[in-house]
Image (cartoon, rainbow over all chains, first blue to last red; front, side):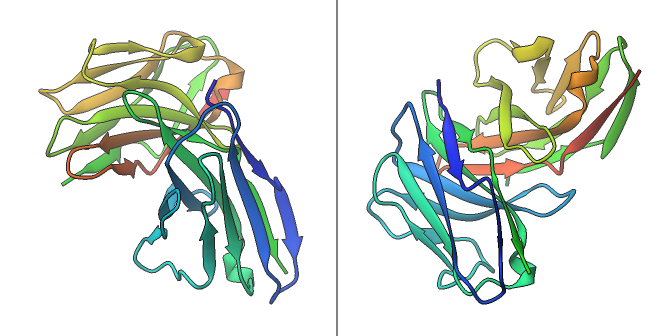
Length: 115
Length: 114
């Protein structure tokens, strides 16, 4: 149980284009989810916390207009990297908070490479 | 304030020998503690979690961890390493009092030699 999917698993795009990443909880529903970014050989850095039907809360230093989060349902959230630049190249991981006691269930990640 | 310290950035063991990955934490409330494993270019997989029940927690793939409040530690162990255990391991602390907060450790890279 508690399976999370991300699509695409990897994407290569040109600088200046926008990329959308989908995150789905496949066998459970949850109100709260998180988007993380992970640079090579580093730990996960929380980008934003999102509750279904509400605006996401972004961490300090994360531009909300650049990283658009749409959390339309209890099983689907999307992260759009707008006008991507090479420095946005990273591994993006989503997670959903669910269960008692609360646990985070992570997606497999999306590797973004901006040329 | 919450914090998590993974004391070793990398650990190298021989196949068949014990594994010890160390984690110390600080928390203002009664935390939940987790260990996750990440294989290259993969997402995080939950190994085990402590949530104020038994202090010795058994997880998947033969891993276990012991919560020691007096030492504020939550070290991960496995009696016998397997080549497939080579990965990055993250110790994580969560608090749900006064808002849900999660802090990740910096990670420990486990190398397993044949």
